[in-house]
Image 1 (spheres, helix red, strand yellow):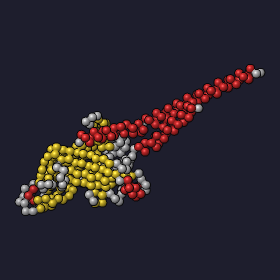
Image 2: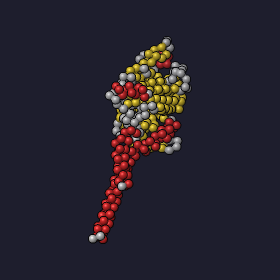
Image 3: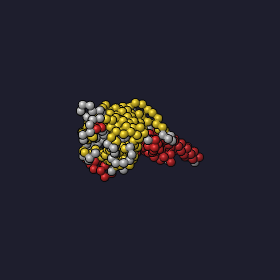
Image 4: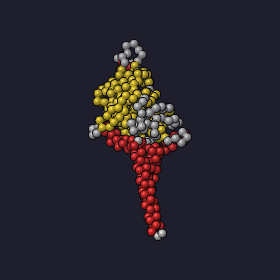
Length: 323
């Protein structure tokens, strides 16, 4: 009887794990709070402190903070969908002094499983309403070997990130298996900036409005079970251009910024074990538990038949003895 009870329990547990447990585990926490750091020791940039071209190390710090209250608001707008809302602040600078070389603030809603943007009236970028598209801070749980749309904040549009292959990313202490995705944005106009006329090699007679252009070759290494972006590299260029005779284009940004070793290792430490657990629950663990349940049921049934046969034979012997 014990084997039958155990078998029924294990079989039920295996089915429940397959049907329910994975969906409960493979979701982004609504109160998630993370930070990623990218750096380049040899960047060229437009130095906002001196209002002139500069060069040297730059650091980009991106902080993402969840807001469970806004998540409820966004879910109500989307008929009760499983949604999280985050505010992302990102600053790029050369000396940690205001003003930064570049700054970004976003508030957005994402599907907690796919990581993709979902419509929400509260979405904004740098204080302006906007409709986000594609992946924003992560890829889907159980990321596939295919292309994904990824939001580029500079051009305010999604770009295509193509699957390129699998790659082991090394940390300072250990490594993790990833899918490598890459995509490019050709030089694109994206804004206007007021700068001194003299930066273009012209007589400095005051400020002018220069056109800003941008290009980027982006590579992202994604841990496929969690969809976490373990490592990011951006070969980014920005220019300031003035449509006047004799005006030279000015490099506003020329950098190959990549995730810091500390960021990579922190991602390996946090998501390596989570990846193992998610993969087990998604693939072999429910079948293993269910299989043990079936074996227990078979063992219990065999013992029950043997017990019944044995006691049936004893009853026949007693009847014969009393005849």
